[in-house]
Image: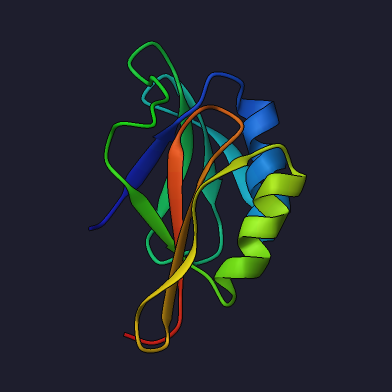
Length: 116
């Protein structure tokens, strides 16, 4: 994967949510006429929050996994920032823990910690 875009309805709200949850800065930009906020630090891949007519948040679309140091800590921050748990932290393979949450925009987001 070379790029991802997470649909948002309120870019400012989503930027605040993701900066609080993942602890990484985002930079606001306009790309191809769309308001975006690009993740400036590696989160497993390069991508952005995207706002525009063709960007519709959903729990049912593609699942994006962020590579994080501690899945449980990130899940706790997501809930504190207004998200909700969709899949609790679970060890799916020895040493690999994943979790899923609904973000402030209504997207299903996953996190993974541990070595592959």
